[in-house]
Image (cartoon, rainbow, N blue to C red; front, side):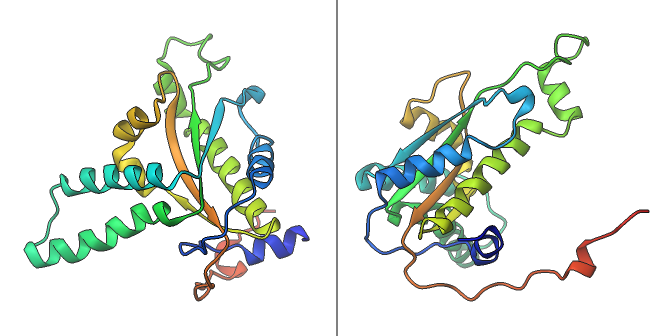
Length: 206
């Protein structure tokens, strides 16, 4: 598939058939994710693919438990309605044939060695280049999923239970959890959301 077609076809897919994702396809998606740019070519990431339905269900339960502990700003009826919506968007990955988990570790830059500032402060000043790299890797997975005949969705909602999920997956420091990508064969396609036109998002400074 041509790149333009792949980009234009990509949508956030949240409903999947029961068809499994080929293991070689999962490896190829991760291989392409690993080609994304990183600081000093540090490639400070590892990817975990999960296809075990019991584990995905247990991970979803961890997220639901964490969400239920949050103090929400609604009355009882409103809380239940909003929480149900939030829970679904944060846990639909349990029904996906495959889940790719992105983990990363901090990378010491040349600036870390040159100035008397903490690593966290330097990363903040540079506008979180590690997370920018993570976004590039995830986009490679999303586009590769489309290219290989699948659908996918990038999830940040489950990170509300980041610490608990790290413990469950035995992710130990200095590694930490970044995001999930649910992958499978689409069970139909949702209505494509409208996107802003080029004149609304583009400025040229000559």
